[in-house]
Image (cartoon, rainbow, N blue to C red; front, top):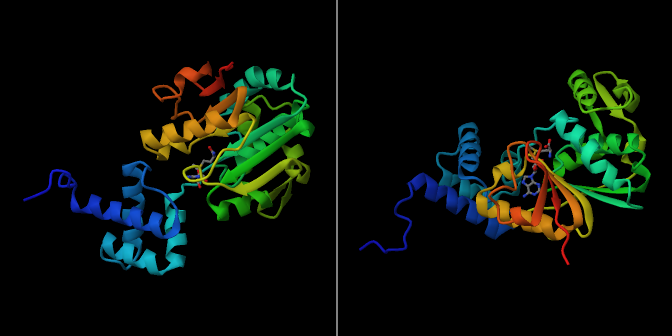
Length: 282
Ligand SMILES: C[S@@+](CC[C@H](N)C(=O)[O-])C[C@H]1O[C@@H](n2cnc3c(N)ncnc32)[C@H](O)[C@@H]1O
């Protein structure tokens, strides 16, 4: 007899994926069990097609006994696509709606969660500098992928991307010339080192690590899209608890607080650009 609570509606492949993610969690503490199923399946099948493994079960065996293979999978699971001043209207609205409030504070704490290789963080540093706020700001830039964090700390980017970044910067309401913020070296650009002055980069996992206290701003863009609804709610709780009253939350254009458990606890600054403000609590 098949037990009522068994997972007999799942395909074998889905079961194998669950066992693989459970194994990674139990052995290494990385928790991908509540990432979006479609995303995980795509990434696992992609790795399988590149490897000499015959099945996901073999992949599970491999990851249990081979730490290097774990690193490969972690890189597969974390999509690091990013750019400077990504979605320029987001930065424009941030300047118009959020900056005037930040200007009333003597000290500002900003958390970029899931910062990837740093382009987003340096964009914010430039914006805050132009608005005269950088010197009184502390930025925490976190990601669970240490390889991208190292790149972020270097602040060296391909020169081929600069044309797009310059366009984004102008569209985002940049006040000067983007060329003021880098020097070109062969096929790369090195960002102005003063932009790093107020940034602390740190390894932080949104699924398993704790609160960053008393933030005035949290930016977490294009990360929640890889999480299922339950995990999104868990992370919104983390952000809610990390924000001060009246603190701002910015998420990606394809993400939203709407329909989450936390919608009632925030005012909407722009649903289009996904900027929210934590309501004042007594
Ligand atoms: C697509 S990038 C977004 C980068 C940037 N925020 C942007 O919008 O351009 C997603 C980033 O989220 C990070 N990430 C995914 N899961 C995470 C987790 N559980 N904790 C912290 N960072 C995570 C990935 O490593 C990756 O760098």
